[in-house]
Length: 114
Image (cartoon, rainbow, N blue to C red; front, side):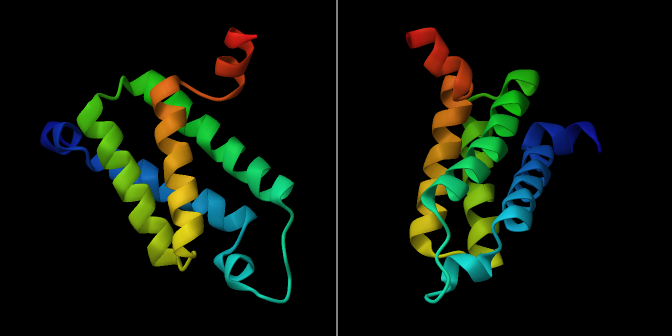
């Protein structure tokens, strides 16, 4: 990967795709769209928390600025939509990504406020 790609944020796009693929492995779009088989909120929450923790770690290691955080969120959102998730799920997952990358994760943030 060249310096220009890194400056533009191609690495962020690749990471967003990786995150979306991780979600898809553990919570396939077919389950999200299914009206017959419902998945528990706890399972969905656990899947998203695990993936978003990795996003928070990535954000810390790569010192993402405002532009790259926005690019990560948009790329993640587009990847989830392209995979076939419902609009509601895409919005919730993307909002979680923004929160996790801005605050630096879920578990540590919760522990720090207690």
